[in-house]
Image 1 (cartoon, rainbow, N blue to C red):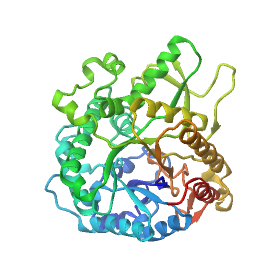
Image 2: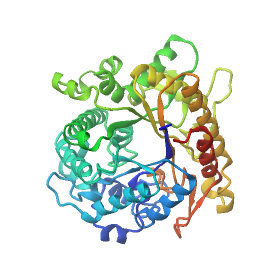
Image 3: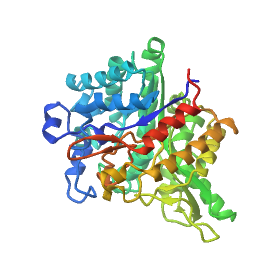
Image 4: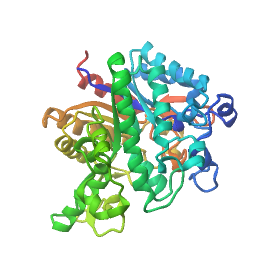
Length: 459
């Protein structure tokens, strides 16, 4: 069957080899380059300049994916690598274009389907300086120019496009609580940023459908994060808080795109702080994704009464009324291994949005893995357990519940720069030695490969 499976990565998390290489490659300065230069912003003081050196080692990485038998590879294109100044009409860095062209060709050489993300958080810093980036509508036109370049140069070889990765994170972590680049704290800007992202997405999809789809025959959508929310108990206030959390975590973006407007709960919670769409914009936005792109990692139990608009004023917990806690701990406080939540989430999204689902990220960072010797880190039994549970949950949703899921991408192919947590959490199914850039597959890579080979019918 046509189910796509493989691993996902992002440009800012894996490409960098050194600051010198970054400059020599012609790549422009990104908001993550600037953010990681600021003392105290990145947990271990690492930076986006030096990550996994995928820029030089991409052939080796794709060959390793091929050896695992993957059918697809999800990667992101770096806007500042292609257009350093970011602007419409700005000079194009042909070295950058050639790099992604080579990555795509390398995938195709092995029969691997390239699945490309246009924006995975690395905005050209020049646009942040010029007009505050996503907080200003001027970005729509600059983003359209960048997307047009990608479609024209790569679209004959790329059939699967994502406009944005996890807009909730861009808005909340980048512009609400300031933990991610560009590091802004505000209770008004995130809602404006979200609005501009939705409009940017819709305009790019319109461009693709009108100018490229007939000739290139691909599909285009957006990918949203959002974890399952399970009410702490059956009390009306906790049940209501659970839906409120889903409305903000998922509905903020999914409701306008698939259903035609923001959730009523968000409108009442935010009032005038939530921008509104014109009728013309609503027409552009509704139906602007060919599928539901889904990133998910964990499940929370939900209690009412938090002062946190970004989560619908819900408390995100892991405890239950009987005193037990759901899920094994990971390297990150927000992430626990709760496989049963995935089946519920898949059913919720399919029932609500009635759109085929492409799972574009799901994965686990083993607690304390960064302290382990390489030999010990390779035996990542906790990650194997995680994938075993989540993939079983996926299979149940598809086979027993009839949910239309068409891909699964593990996060991540290899250990990488985990944003403000730096190189500390390791999400990879392939171990990276950050001194030598040597790659070594972990046990989970073999498990992942074997699971899909035995559960996905070969074409």
